[in-house]
Amino acid sequence: MAVTIAMRGYRAVLGALIVASSALVFTAAGWAGLESLRGQRNLAQLEELSGQLLQRAELAIDYAVITLGDYTAPSNDLCNIEALRTLRQQTFVRGAIKDIAVLAPDGQLMCSTAPAQFDLLTSGSARLAEYESRNTSIVLQPSHTEGSGLFRVLWRIGETHSIAATLNIDMLMFDIFPAQLRDEALAEIRIGPGDVVARFGDEASTAPSQTARAFSAASDRYPVSVALATSQTSFRNWNPWPLGPVLAIGAIAGALIGLLVAQTVMRPPSPVEALRSAIRRGELVPYYQPVFDLVTLRIVGCEVLVRWRRRDGELVFPDRFIPIAEASGLIVPMTERLVEQALSEMAPLLVEHPEFKIAFNIDPSHLVQPGFLDTLDQIVAQAGSPNSRIVLELTERNAFPDMKQAVAVTSEARKRGYRISLDDTGAGHNGLGHIQDLKPDVIKIDKKFIDVAGTVEAADAIIEVLVNLGQRMGAVVVAEGIETEDQRATLSRAGVAHGQGYLISRPVPLATFRALINDLERLAKPAKNDPQMA
Image 1 (cartoon, helix red, strand yellow):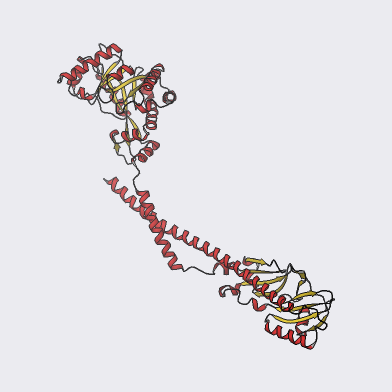
Image 2 (cartoon, helix red, strand yellow):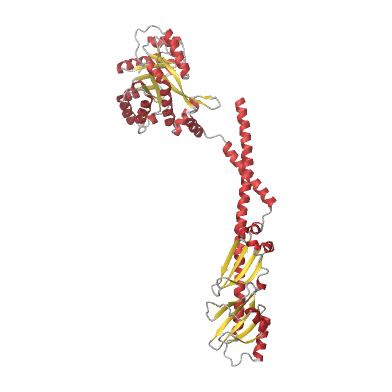
């Protein structure tokens, strides 16, 4: 009872720990997952922003090209007063265009709507760098002053002149960043490989020491590209999830999942799984029931039976797990493990008693499995026991799935030195026909006949038939379930050679079995005729 209460307490504590741990783990994992999603969302938005900024720069250049297109037709006097007035009106309408100028083939200014803007771009006599667009007639010229926001769109008109628009694109950038990123972010518009014509933001915040996140986009029509960068800190703090609700949802979800896990973990294993685990952990142990001479009471052998000794000390009897083992196929590994352990334990006793026989119950389905005898040979050889000391006791709980194969296996087993015993003869599946087919070396009379021996004529007749049959076949007859001295005496007079039952001992562990042998040897009667067991 104390063990059961302790186990229940242990399971309750374990269940609570599982629920709490699951809530914590799920909350942490959920938060990490949401943070990962937030990071992916932020990356997508910044990539989208870089695309928007590039689109703005391309659109400004497109406006300039459209404006210049209105003045590309041949003219004898592009710099007359009316033409310049019209150009000034266009620069006023197109906000990003600050000047439109007509240039000679050598790049010298012929006329301009705003000469001051023209001079501001050039800032000296050095020629501006030129980068051709996909349409090679359109050329972009960055300002000598990096980040001024100024650059020129130049359209070459044959060999007579070029017409150029000076753009100021600072205004395109001030609102490109969300408010949360503006203090620690940087945006640049570049002409050609790396001439920065416009810049917005804080360069220091995206220095390598800040582990900046960078994004870029380039036009496929113009030699223009954009770059965005934000510090890791700013990126990490952007678009935060509401902490409280997220953690609460994660904890609740984790607790629910923990409850499901706890129910699964705490649910007792299925009988088959429990038995499989018991076999693996060595909880199935051999018990030994003596087989004794009915005249002298001297122990001549034993039947190995199995008990399940659980880790909490509970002893489980075979009627609770043998049917499960037979139905699930676990009877095979269980029997093999039992034979191995019993032979290892019994090795010294077999040396001390050269005629001693040890019997193992073999299920019919196990007997006819391919390789049964080869596996048995390996186990017996490893234990150092002669095959002749081993009795294969064929149980009656199940019918033989293939009697022809069973006959072949038992015949081969006998050739290898093993003895064959037919358990519970006269009851269940083991009838007289099996004696004829299997030709056993040992015939065991079922307990139901022993219980009424000497009092029911039909039972006495069956016992007499089996004794006579055993004598004619050269088989030893063993009476099962002898509980009283009267039964022993009656069976001995009937010619039964050996017996087993509670009169001498119930199945016991090895230490008790050895002590019992010693006690009975001191009390044994002189033997007139002592046939050997099997």
